[in-house]
Image (tube, rainbow, N blue to C red; front, side, top):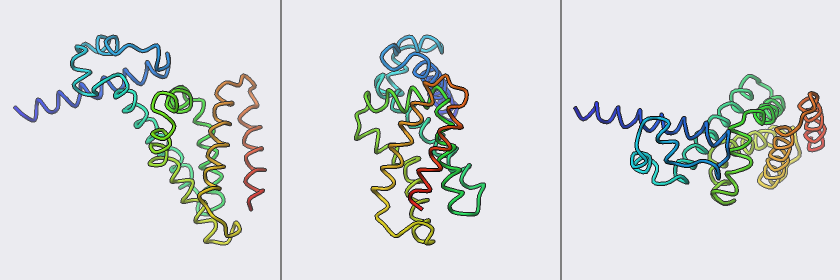
Length: 193
């Protein structure tokens, strides 16, 4: 009986998370009403509060889920390559391409820094995708592919540049925008080589 209850709670949480993600990506944080999210999946607002504590709590869970998925996407793209330089390029390109995903664009790049605050957003990013970039750059320094240098500031510079590029790509209507951005990224990366 207890395991059935636990399964029901987990299913309700997953359903609320999925509906919250859909709405936050489509409408933005400020236009989402927690009671409407709950009602859309057939549960009470109290159930939503039970699982997430507040609308911010639901949003935080959505941000965490989207960041984990993005980190996995970037790592998978990088892992297709043996060469450390190609791993970096592939991971960066996967990140840029992810900007076309409404959840990445709206939830991670637009709303999360504002709603959660810069420090919390950066901390969550560090746990998911930012550490992959730092690891890739560290491997390149250790392999002698790029000059020995402090990796932390370099990682922050590249991360910031890619976040801005991903936002720009998400808003661009130019069908060549991704291709142009990838070429610019290659020139930027070659500059650190």
